[in-house]
Length: 169
Image (tube, rainbow, N blue to C red; front, side, top):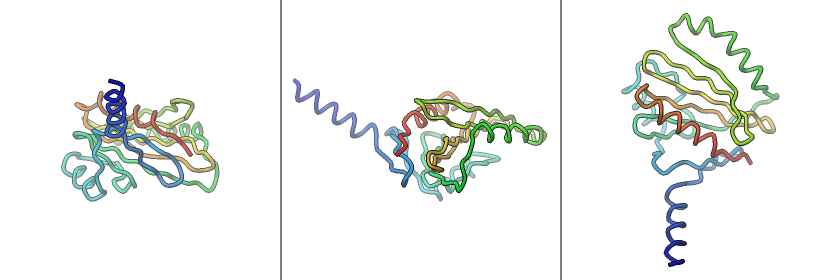
């Protein structure tokens, strides 16, 4: 009986989560139901399914789950970045953004002791949530989640899970 439980635990851990290294910055547990795609596949999917995509489809790590696209990569800065300053600069550009018919929200959230700048943007039924982690030694993680309104609950859960499973090196 114990052997069966141990085998089930190994199976669950092996097949439900994969460790994806992101160069020198972080490890992320990516759920099994998320399919890795290359940049060309991401570009084609985005062009086919979204009217005004603003997601960077050249991010190093691109994934798809249903009709949701997830992308992320590490970044490096030559000087320190303050997330509060980034938030204020983004808020300063909101008038210009709203004039283009886009609704935006910005926030800084704390998940498991890690701070993230979140920029939520939507126009009609298309949503893009971009994130930037607080840098550690001028390195961090950036990315986004692109989806339609019908997938908003799932996309919010994907983003929350993704950010919760980041382990910085």
